[in-house]
Length: 215
Length: 183
Image 1: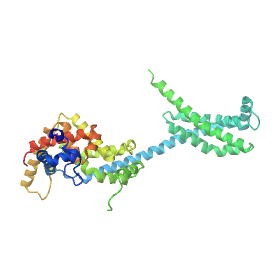
Image 2 (image 1 turned 30 degrees about the vertical axis):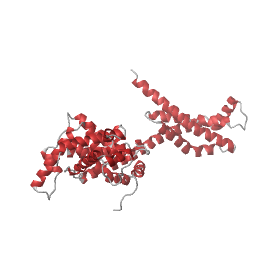
Image 3 (image 1 turned 45 degrees about the vertical axis):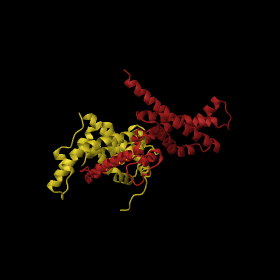
Image 4 (image 1 turned 180 degrees about the horizontal axis):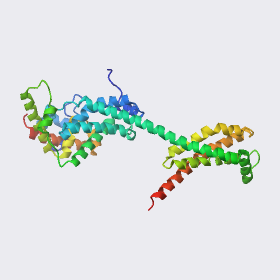
């Protein structure tokens, strides 16, 4: 191997650390070429020389204190914002629950189930009308999420889940005359509808935002 | 205090999960090298302290963006290096240590005035030699020598191949040898 081909690869054998062990064609060349060995030693000397550059005293402890204090402050702020996010989702869910309860007073659950059964031409044991009726009572969640205005998909899902979680016990009591499987269908429809209507409310809120900024 | 033995990547996973003590461990492990790199790059201690702080705050701010497959140290020095680049863009050119800052940098209660003067002169020679290098060469020397990074790590930071980094380092060291002579 010629010196020209080796010179730019001298550092392949390292700059003198204990872990560096010559290997390969460069190392083989160095065994026979005094000039290249001298060049490598000169490079290692310059490398070591840089240790003599004075003045790199460590940073003061105050820097560490500032960094860690700021990190703790930001971590706390993030956890507060996360709580506020949940508070916004809870607000949307409660609005939806209030509106859903009003709706259930105006249109009781058995009545809406009967309408759905008629519309879908289902029998008394079909679960689909119960599913659809349950989903219809999730429509008010869209109102709550729409009122959030600047919500996110995560907030919409959280609102839907909270809506179902809070309202489900009441719904189960009100639907006690339904057969168990049909109760499950109704509550499932309510939950599914809550999440889907939450996204609908989010979409409407974003449409409204776009309209406001359109020239 | 028991020595921290967890790897950077394990600690970073804990930082992402919200552990302030894991962040402290990362800071304590790496701040010295990052600071030395920043100080040698900028030649200004106060600014190096500011950028040290900013580097680690960005580590925390962007912790969710760190990929576990990437080496933490490479990512850390990429942040530090980018801050240096941004700082030089703000300035008109590289700045040599001035007398006042040098005195602070070399502050050693036990040093005699003669020792301080000699250290000051030596530091100025090193700084002047580094400024003679092209910025790309200077950067490689600083990352390798004072950041303690391998050619592979530096290659990932600057977007070059490890071989190109070694060639650049070789040429930079040869130039420095000519500039520094027999110190």
